[in-house]
Image 1 (cartoon, rainbow, N blue to C red):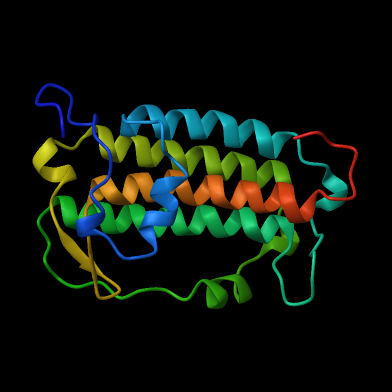
Image 2 (cartoon, helix red, strand yellow):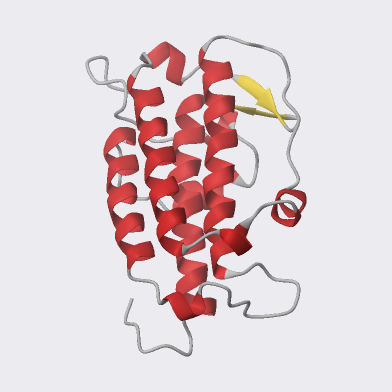
Length: 185
């Protein structure tokens, strides 16, 4: 499954991931190199955010839903948490990690004071940090199993979840936040 010469070639292993991960893995079908997938998604997502209309930045498509900026900050913060998990698991840290409440994070962020460009810049920084983190891992490190939120996972799987999670939320933005715009995505 994984190349001995290139540790980043290989799809995620659903056996060592939480049930929800399959949905995100499926968003990445057709890709088989983790670093290339992270880089491709970095470029596509940065361009996507740059093209979002500022008039939609604080738009919510329904009551109790996040603003468009809130969605972007959500996938940035989630990636930071997954980076931490990947680091711990790659270092053979067997301490079970708690989950996190995305709603709680959203209630306590500062999107009101953020611009789309600021969030785009932060996404680029965070994704580049993810790529750097993964590039420093061997095959054994990428496939080291840890536990978070009562489920097994590996750094490789977390990388693929990062990509699929961002793709998922960009699709939500296209489908639910840009419905009344002239923007063609």
